[in-house]
Image (tube, rainbow, N blue to C red):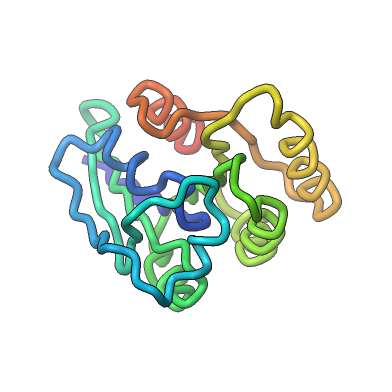
Length: 177
């Protein structure tokens, strides 16, 4: 059986843990803990801050078909855990970068993560997922696409409900096919 490793990255609260849980056929191995007073990064960015944050990796897996197993690895969105990102990405076949379009710091998050993963975005299989999308946020999607164009990065940008299994399967299938 072929095995494909996919990394989920993006800022805290973008939906990485939820996305992995939506498609995983096993119980997700999660390293979420209650937010500490040190976590001002995600507290300031989220319009409705969640109570937990990932501090290690999240892991799930599923069979895409009879011959392909997809292994999903989610990394923490907090910059203080950046040392994990490249380590976990080793051996991956692609990356999904998720953004919460409603984030108070959306533009700075987009700028940071696109530039942080620029080399991967230019050379490997990549897709960008936009969570919590509504039509009122179209200008924010345009800003993301403009930045990608300026950096000569050509990757799909897809609105996705990270809670929805079909949405996530579609996104992952676009990445691996």
